[in-house]
Image 1 (cartoon, rainbow, N blue to C red):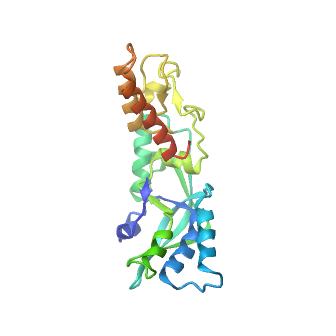
Image 2 (tube, helix red, strand yellow):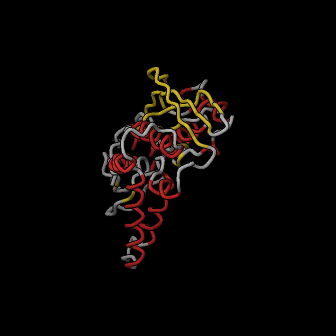
Image 3 (cartoon, rainbow, N blue to C red):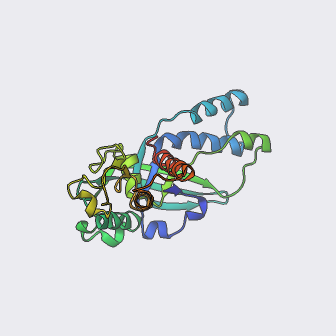
Length: 255
């Protein structure tokens, strides 16, 4: 997934209404920071104290993601405001093969193309609680000084290009029926599960899980393991693979 930017706020967000992920822990502080940067905040405390409050918030690792869909766009001279409604999204164990994952990710990006047949995507989508979030995207630079701008930055809180691993990591607490949360599988010892995801190969190796780590990532890892199945990889190649695994886990919040 990637952060939604002001340039992404276009009409197709309302016509296609893709599934977005919203980090609700970032919404309030984002609003405060934008007011401070714009010089519109009623500063009842010294600015240094506001900076300290915001800095402490940035150091927090708390996350609370919800799935949302765009409902309206408002455009002002200085910003775009995207309003989103929370939806309930469930990844079920019916994602039991590679094609099911591919179909699910197409649904996440174009849910309206699949609304008539829920079996197309193997996901459960329902209107959630009546929660509307308004996210402002400034269309012009901040009015504060460059020093203030350098000290503050509005955190990214809304994300698009959602994949199945993103949903599992952010909405399902990382629960994965394929690897039981280890993020690895032994590709020769899954009782037929690996074959369903084109992940089958010899035993005795740890392969990135195709479901919660991603199909493409698993395929790259499989190619590495097949290349060096009989002979130990060069030190540089092993270190690069280990770094890639760590980076992927961190990207999904597993590290």
